[in-house]
Amino acid sequence: MSRAGGWDIAKALLTSMRPRQWAKNLIIYFAFFFTVSQAWSLEELNEAARLFARITLAFALFCLITSAVYLLNDVLDAERDRHHPWKRHRPIAAGVLPPSIALGMAAALGAGGLALAFALEPVFALVALIYLATMVAYSTLLKRVIIVDILAISAGFVLRAAAGAVVLDVSISPWLYVCTSLGALFLGFSKRLNEVVLAEEGGSLQRETLEEYTPRFLEQLIALVAPATLISYILYTFTAENLPDNNAMMLTIPFVMYGLFRYLYLVHHKSLGESPEEILLTDVPLIVDIVLWLVSASAILLVFR
Image 1 (cartoon, rainbow, N blue to C red):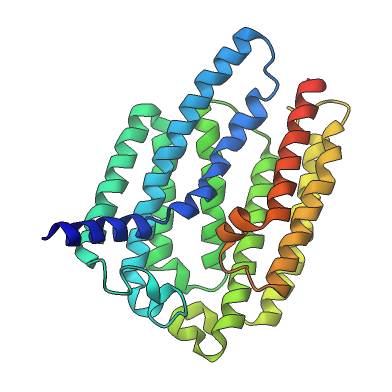
Image 2 (cartoon, rainbow, N blue to C red):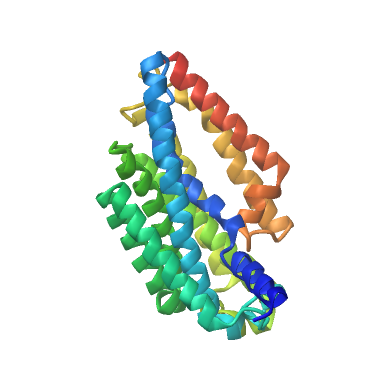
């Protein structure tokens, strides 16, 4: 293989690993944020630094594992991706990256990620293994079953949150898992809605379930999940044991409310729901909203600890 060819393969591999979608793994940090955001003394800050290093390593390992899933998924979906307006440019679908190399890298990333996860924390490795098994099942079978496909994706987000908790050996409010699950369903149904709308008559060529989903059905599902997500977060701010007793966390509700409304606007008026990671990385109002939520939540946890 020539040097140029090898460099092209390396770039294609990195692209297929989808580093932009690693942003989804930031959910792992939830456990850290709600556990150590109340640290104030020097001893607590030193412990917080140690935990941050630990969970950052967990984040990096989860990125390896998710990239293994993306590589496998692109190999399995290569033919269908060629019928998609922008997925056809993915390296495997475009013929730039040989499937054999992609599968070899997927196996190496998956096995290596799990081995390192076990060295870090055996229970964390178990959660990562369950995530990997769930996503492999999704890529090979579950994505062909209407509704179950989105439930599987939602489970992946919940497992990310659980991974952060077990690697720090802390417990977080069940409401946070509920919020994560419902939020993931909201993102998943919004993604399918934009896929159906943009695919029009050729949806079945891109994804089998697009033939069964309809815009009306998906809009009804979103109308159920969006308010449920907001209500679950509201209940979380009032009932979680690790939050201030004066319910000051309720002051962050407007930021979550705006975030949901903004996302709905982007889905229905800008047709951007097909790539949630692009919205989270490029939409300035939403980014500002998330930053304000983080700042306000941190301030509340510090002041009313």
